[in-house]
Length: 219
Image (tube, rainbow, N blue to C red; front, top):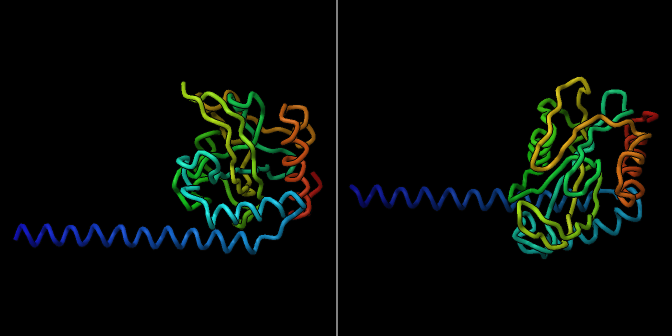
């Protein structure tokens, strides 16, 4: 009986891992399909889409930080109901106000990842997708830095951005090990708040334009 139980347990364990493997492969295939169907907004997105697809098809462990050169991340562009403010955090590493987001860390359900990151970084639990589609794509360079006492070499973030909405009256809270402030920032003040010029000119301004075009709102 013990041998039968052991055999049954092993079979169940193997079945679990097999099902999990199929699930993971389906998620990767779905993401690849979604990216192929994604219509680039500008030249930056066109070029970055090509490279992200190459990494997705040929890269090793790109959903985890085990790939030290490039890995998948997600960002949240969170607007208020009037579309005139964006929820941002003061990131300690970058010493600047920036959007919310983080690493996939092995989770291929990227919409689940982005919701988790929003809650962790801002304390906001009630947030809704204005579209479940990928809103923006970009390859981001990350300069070498210290994190939790260890040096992290320069690398790339293969980033997918999602568009969300939250109530600006909700309580906000910082994540002390990552940020030291969370605020709703007026769209026309982002360039003053963020010290990352490339992000302001290439990414945040693009996202503001896309919100205007997609939602038909003047922001």
